[in-house]
Length: 344
Image (cartoon, rainbow, N blue to C red; front, side, top):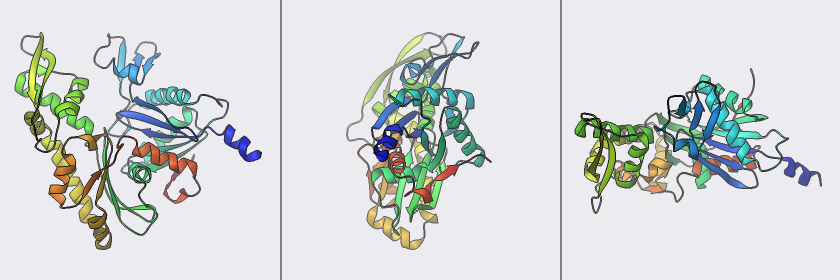
């Protein structure tokens, strides 16, 4: 009876606080929220106009007094106050009952996060209504979400490419043995496309258009059939709207520098890997997660560069939050891999 009652009262949540999207997993319910990490705010009053998908549609389209802001940059909090407001709204949306009890929260953070950045995440979550906050490194959460045996004495290599960071880690015995965390990922790909269009066509496009181009015709490896896409933007010379046709070949070229940085980071992590674990990776291969794993041909390029098997999981965007959710279901079992956040 007591167990049932305590389970009913529990409203614990796991959060993948991403640069591009925030996902929330509620214990016993699964993933209940998947929204862009964007807040539209009135700059004069500080009032929140919209959060999530609705706010994302406002990016680059707001009048002077309203700002559509992405409060996270490179995987960490860039605007503490707005992140707190965003989290509060998301946590409230994810709770369909039991609002009178403050939840325990597990938050996935980049493995290269500093102590100051870690404290900012903890404080934001506590101010947004958390009773207790646990932090887990994103690559470990992703590995658990995929179902890799992270507690065994065998090497599991994961590359998680998000919006703000690329996390590469070799995991064994509930810990990261070798890792490389770089602040180069999906956002940098979008920016590379913006700069390519600006430099070659004197045309300005917004970040949402750049993201759409990346998804539709972006690639890291030669496509079987190259494709074109018509886009709209503003002519920088004439100052009027303009239509332009882009090819997948030129977008691949535009993305090449960013993709090369990810390849180099992967090689760096492999160089740090102890020989015994490297042997395991030859057998098991590399697992790719995160939104960046969906870039066409990226797995083929990594296979070519490393001579190792590379596997993209079925739902790469959900792995981190599903892993954090599994940890939430049994916090005591995963105690060794959690960074429990407490007040000084």
